[in-house]
Image (tube, rainbow, N blue to C red; front, side, top):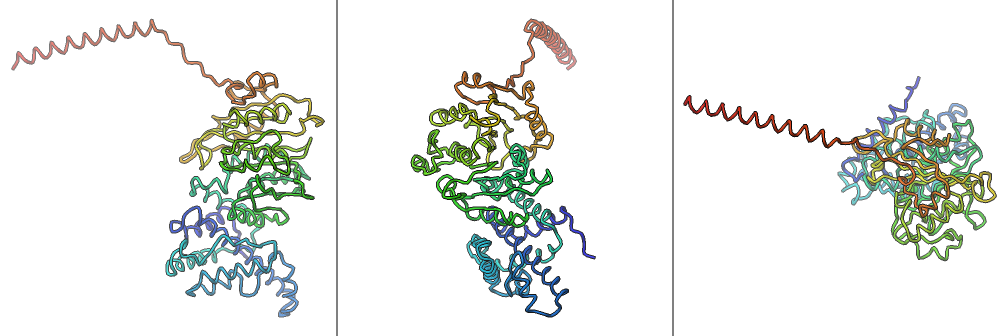
Length: 504
């Protein structure tokens, strides 16, 4: 009877295996190698499991077995499996052997896996070192992963393990972590704010390694349905491939992830028009410089009709894109932003005003500082609801709910953490549209207009703590009393010193 592999055991085993490269390769790079090897081992083990089942059924009939294997989820050509490579672990050209096996798998699977392993080179002197050092690391790496049997592990466990590794890599990668990772609890809150339902098309236009997308989909699964579709676009090639592998490991083979610059070249299209979604969620790069403002005026999709954001800050470029790809009168948008988005003026102020005048903004949430590896500044979440626009089901709802959750966290060693209780408090406040002293406030359109469409949270949620009133007269009396005691003590000390001198 095969041993039951728990989530915790698999996580620990994988992280131990990951340490074969840790310390020898930059943290921002070695994650790509580890996650590729995990995916490689996973699809190889699935392949071996299929072979074993077919042998039980067809015996030594190699032709029938080969014919059946052509229909498997991932095609592994002869000689290209993890076990085939492991048998050659002591070859001098081990890195090149791994590269060739991976590229054979890409070719055998066509467009599904095309380019999936392009961002890793197991024969790289510049990344993994010269042959002797490189081979030792690769032998250790293959040996560690060879001990892990992934044949009987379901997609949930292997997918969760993949996300566990990404989270661990994010903690090590420092500022570069923002390229591929959103802290899990922030992503969890964002996904729940999206409120995905069965039948939804869900999109993340800056999807990183796709963890947020998957969490948004889990909100549908929590309702007992698998009826949803996931779409994403990612600019960085290596991160794009992490997202693709993440989808496969979670069993979301039908998801559509594109590689490219969303702001300058959106690729999620239908009939040469922007694809529309029920829910759009994202944690885009904060205040992206040189985002493409020079191209925005002639954008063929007219995404920036409310105004063109400054060329040095792309926050409202992402917001504009997200709102335009949300379904008219139906779609919902939830996005993480730096606080400057709430109050900066000039073109950003004009865009913000138009969004509020169109009645699209529903919720503003201020989060604690130091939640991200990439920055210690506090951030905010904006939720836009297109059902509030003219002709939508919630056109009559005009208020904007402000929440100051800046104190809702557990202090950690490296960064602060949103706990489930903090998330629950935020969500319950939204569900009940509650006004809670020093925590939440419902602001009317008129109140926001009076503030010149400035959304800075302290303008709406009064968090001022009154200081205890100081009784100056009482303090003066206490100081006089203390002064008297000091003088008495000095007199006594002088008397004792005099007596001591006389004794001498």
